[in-house]
Length: 196
Image 1: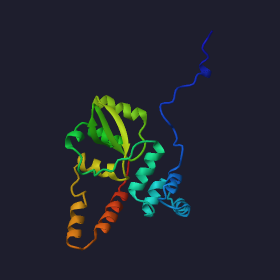
Image 2: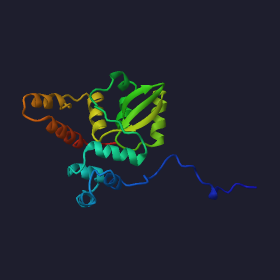
Image 3: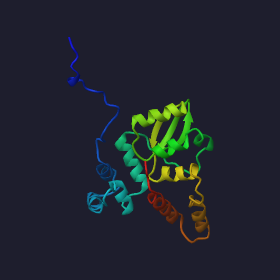
């Protein structure tokens, strides 16, 4: 019996599409209404993803987007301050991989390196990171903007990226409230560009 190459099906290396849209997840989570979602779609700029449009219009927060992406990809969500990561973990991931895949090392437990990401990462990319680090790797999703800031802070060593010290001084001097500080932190995250 001969093998018919034309009938061969190649195995998939991972999911190619998410089963639910970000918009429907955000509406289900009561992060926005259907009317707000429709408005976000109407206002979407060329090349802009829906989540970015909703952030730009301040209809959702970076945390809400991150949680929706985590649900969409069936991955855990982690709230994380990108400025307080362990430098020893950062040293485990070469800069070229962090920049190429826009990921940040979050923790190392029992030989498994947990990486922060703002969206999907292909199984091929995960395998490449595993080869370079000689560690098993797992992915978690974080708020939009977190990885962008962390990569710039840890790998590009850009000064003055962390607004928290200034914002805390403003709260202490009663120029803004703690609630205002939280809103400003969310807007700062939302304003970060994600290249991965």
